[in-house]
Image (cartoon, rainbow, N blue to C red; front, side, top):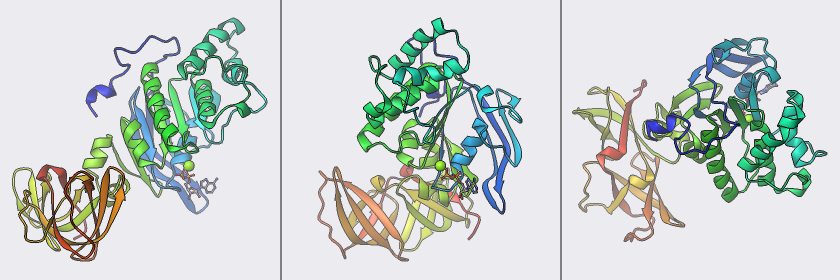
Length: 380
Ligand code: ADP
Ligand code: MG
C-alpha cells in the first residue's frame, strides 16, 4: 500500500456533509482482566486520524474486548485510552462521538429503515428539519435510497448491514468501530461490501477500527493491521509489512499460508542472508542478521518454483522436499510437500504452467531471493 492511502480524504472524493474528519486514538498499556483471566494484556497503539485499522486475531485473542473498551462499554482494568488526546476515563459511550456496527448491535426490528437511521439523530436531539437531509445522504451513501419504508425483516443480510452502516455514520462520527460486520455474509457479498466500506470511510475521512478474524479481509481493507494473540499485540504495521516481514512466527503463521524455514545464518551480505536449513539452503532478504544467528525465513506459496530433483533451477535457494499431495484449486494447483525434517511445505503453481509432478516424487524448491524474508529469532 502506498503512503498516499494513508492521507485522506482522496482528492477525487465527492464532497459530503457527513464528512467530519477522523479522530486519533491512543492506547497506553491497556489491560482487561476477568478474575484470573487476562482478555487484553498490555496493548499500546497509536492510530492517526483517518486510518483504517483492523484488529486481526484468532477467536479469543481479545479483539472484541479491546473494541468495547474503546467504545466505552467496559472499562480497562489498567492503562489509558485517549481519543483526540483526551482521556476517555469516565466518559460515557454516547459522549465519545463514535459510530458503531457491532454484531450484537443489530437493527431495531420494529422500526423501518428510516427510523433506524434516524435513531442516533433523535438521541443527539438534532432538530427534526435537519434530520431528513442527513438520513437521505446516509442512505444514499450506502446505496439504499428508496428503502426508507422497509422493515429490517424485508431486507437481505447485506442490506441490513448497509442500514447499520448508514445508522453508524449519520451522526457524523469521527471514529467508526466495527466488530465483524460482514461475518454473517457470504463470500461474494462480503468482498463487495469490503470495498464499499473502505471507499465510504475514505470519502468521510473517518478513522475506522474494524475487527475481524479473516486475514484476507484485513489485508484488503486496512491501512494498518494490529495482529493480536492471547490478548497481546503481536505486530502493528501495513498489510505489506505483515505479509512480507512478519515479526515472528505467530505473525508469519497467521497472515496466510507460508513456508517457514528455520536454520542458522551463514553467508550474510548486503541485505541478503543465506540460511542453512534441513534439506538445503535458503537465500532471502534480511537486515540486522549476523553470521551464526538463528533465523526464520518466510516464503509465500505463490513464489515457490518446483523442479524434479537434479534439474536446474534459476534461484540460488534450493531446498529438497517430497510431494505429498496435489490439490486443484481453481486458478492454481496447491502442491503440498514434506521437508527434510518432516515439516509441511506448500507451493502454488498456476494451472496454465507445465506440471508433471505426482505424490511421492522428490523435488527441489526455489524462489527469487527478493521473495524471501529472513528474520532473526531469539531462540536457537
Ligand atoms: P475475540 O473477540 O478476539 O474473539 P474476546 O475479546 O471476545 O475475543 O475475548 C478474549 C478473552 O476474554 C476470551 O478468552 C474470552 O473468553 C474472555 N472474555 C471476554 N469477555 C469476558 C467476560 N465478560 N468474562 C470473562 N471472560 C471474558
Ligand atoms: Mg469477537
